[in-house]
Length: 270
Image 1 (cartoon, rainbow, N blue to C red):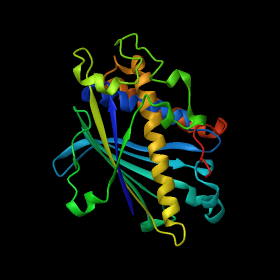
Image 2: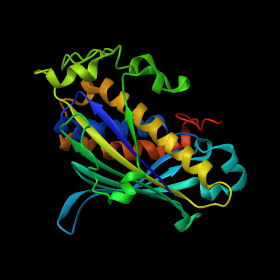
Image 3: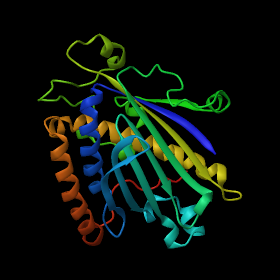
Image 4: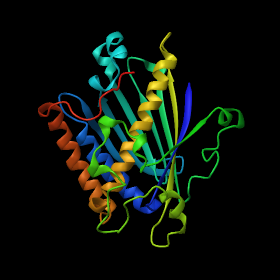
């Protein structure tokens, strides 16, 4: 089992991020869907359990070209689908990813706290001291081009070049994180994303767990760069707009998986 905590600082408020995240998830899903691959939404509904209220989603990710070749060679086609169940009780969210072929030998758990700070809180998820000692904390800088895979880079999704018309935020300079807390006209927040990965397969465990953590960092980096650069598209939306958009996206994804070519992020081979 491999646990890392990714901290993503953003020039956005916790309240704004709730809408921005959901908008960007819907848009990013479309960019990853086609050729029989991508995202299928099975459920998207309110839930209430043990005093916790929020939105529950169940999605299937059809992954074929998005997993490394050494897994494709060893696993049947059915193993390349993963189920994602998410409980969004914002500002806390929990996502659990499983695979029917691997059963209890495979798990990705992502727990996120969204806080109005600059990422200085330690052990925000309340792990026991022994577990927390082993957690690797990784800071993601959305304006650092060196953190972006060359084949993922898009100039229109570069926070160093983007200037928001509606909020006047951006472009982000080399010292943007140092300057951010002192800016009266710009909010800030941190997404603390605790990622637990379990992949039990003799001889492959370390390699695959490290690969998955690398992919999660890549996803979080690309996603939050997009979210910031798309701010003018979502900043004026409310939650009703988002729910309508999600339903429309669900229908579009079903069509795109069948009609469109394969697209989006593919596995990088070492």
